[in-house]
Image 1: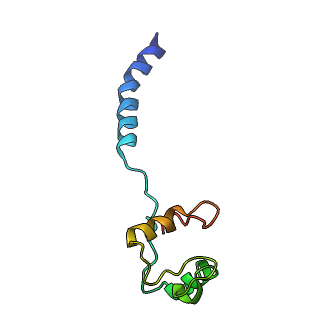
Image 2: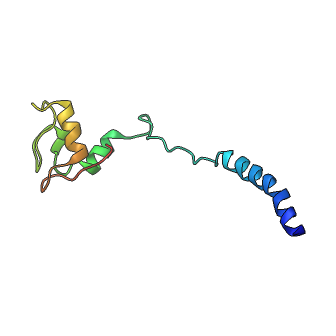
Image 3: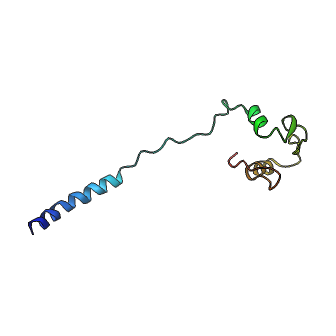
Amino acid sequence: MRRDLWVLALMPIGVVAVTIACGIPVAAQQATTAPNESTTDVGQLFASTCGYCHSDGGRTAGKGPKLMDSPRSDDFLRDRIKLGKEGAMPAFGEA
C-alpha cells in the first residue's frame, strides 16, 4: 500500500515531465536550399542533361525538337520538363 502512495505521489511529476518534453521542439534539420543561380552553370547543366537531344543549346532540332523560338508556351515547356513524355523524354521532376 505504501508503494501505491509513492506511485500516486510521483505520477503528477511524471505527467508534468512528459508534457514539458513533448512541448520542446525537436531540433529541425537544416533546410536544403535550391542552388543559387550565380553558382549554377546553366549552360553546363543544359549540355549535360538536355544537349544530347536538343542540339546546339536548343537552337536546332536533334533527336528532340528545337527549343528556341518554340511555338509552345513557357508553361507547356516547364510542364514537359517536369513530367516528361512517355517513350520520348524522361521527367526531371522539380526542374
